[in-house]
Length: 248
Ligand code: NAP
Image 1 (cartoon, rainbow, N blue to C red):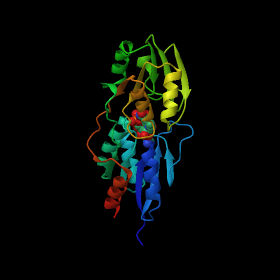
Image 2 (cartoon, helix red, strand yellow; image 1 turned 90 degrees about the vertical axis):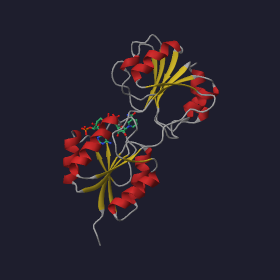
Image 3 (cartoon, rainbow, N blue to C red; image 1 turned 90 degrees about the horizontal axis):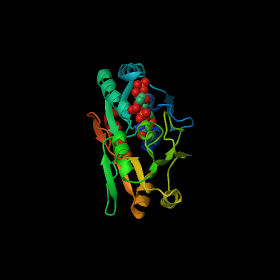
Image 4 (cartoon, protein in one colour; image 1 turned 180 degrees about the vertical axis):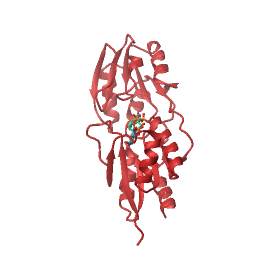
């Protein structure tokens, strides 16, 4: 019998964990998931797990060769642009197939009042015109651009935030999924005027958008970074098929 093909999943998302479970059940595949190590108690995927960076694309290419990896699935978050670019360069240099698993972005629906922007800095510039009490649900990094604003913020993230924070803010450490009832209550309780989010996509954190629509609140939607070229699939099933097409 052929030895199993080694597949690396660059993870940190629900889709990455789902894919690891699917591939781990396949005896023809040995799956290794890689996590950045940002979250202290990460949800562990099925199969083998390694934690920490690779030291850039050159380090990643070396790691792929050393571990005889046949295919890489970049299933990282749509906003994790550095590791995605590293995956393209590292896989190219190591001659390893790369599949990008990216969940579709959220789309506005009737009743939504979305304000699309390209960056957190652009979101910060827009906020003073939208209200004084802001729900900032963009995670624990890159909050510095909001720090100088004379507004009140509800900050929600899994881990405590890094860097300077707005003077007037309340911190809510919490991990999704979130429900519509819970999000509606949160927006009401804190008398939120506007919400800021990244266009992460997926069902786990989308209830805040439904709650904002119900309450007719503006949503500042930070657009996704553009990813370099790679074979792209949008769901776990398609990613598993693409892996099997490569590993045979
Ligand atoms: P990033 O800015 O794209 O990457 C920064 C560095 O972190 C990379 O250069 C790499 O270090 C390391 N890294 C990132 N993901 C890694 C992984 N899966 N395995 C090993 N090393 C990894 O990443 P980020 O936006 O900080 O996100 C970090 C992780 O959190 C990702 O795995 C992502 O899926 C998850 N996440 C991110 C967000 C978000 O909004 N950005 C939201 C939810 C989950 P080296 O250069 O040393 O290899």
